[in-house]
Image (cartoon, rainbow over all chains, first blue to last red; front, side, top):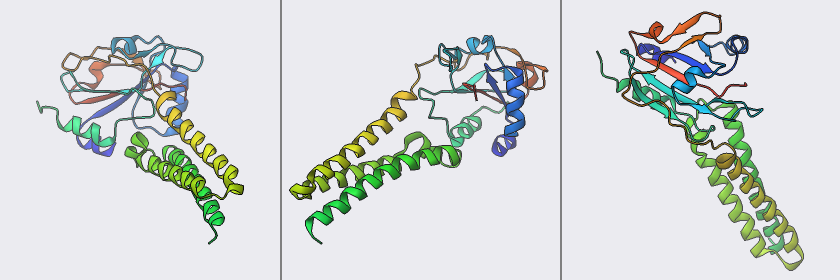
Length: 103
Length: 140
C-alpha cells in the first residue's frame, strides 16, 4: 500500500455486499481505502466481472479481480483470477503501475 | 536397524511430511498470505513435502516385512488420500469460471456507488492519478 501511495496510485474496493457490511469490514480491517457497495452488480456488470451463482446461497457476486485505470480513465491492466486462491502479487501490481505512461 | 523398524519409521515420516505439507499450506495462507504470495499461489514447497512424503510411504511399503505390510499400505493410502484432497481443494474447489473483465485500452466504465460511509463515489472522484479498482467476492 505504501508503495502504491508513493506512486500516487489510489485504491478502491468494489463488492456486492451492502454499505453496512462494508462499514463493519472497514472498521474491523482498518482499511485505508474506500469500499464501494454494488448490491445490484451495476459496476460489476459494466466491468464484466459477474460470477453468477458464485456466492454462498447461489447469489451473484463479483469475481476476484484487479483493474488498473490510468489518470485519464483508461483501463491499462487487469488481473482476473481463475482460482480464488490465487491473487496478484504486490509486485505484479507495482510493475503494472510503473508501466503506466506518465502524462 | 531391523528392516521392519526402518519401514515403520519411513511410513510415519512419509505421513508426517504429507500432513506437514498440507497443513503448512493452510497456515501460510491464513497467516502469512500477504508476505508469501508465491507460496499461496503455487504451493511449491508444500507440494514438494507431499511428494517426498508419498515417496517415503511407498518405500516403506516396499521394505515392510510381510507382517507389517498392511500397516504400511494403510499409511500410504491415508497419505495418498490427503494429497488427493489437497489437490482438489487447491485446483478444483477454488477454481472459478473465466470472466471477460474490462477491455484493456478502453475507457473504464463509470460508476456511482456508495462507499462505507454512505457517500456516493464516481470514477471522476479518482481522476488525476492511477486508480486500482479491486473487486472482491465479498461475504466476508
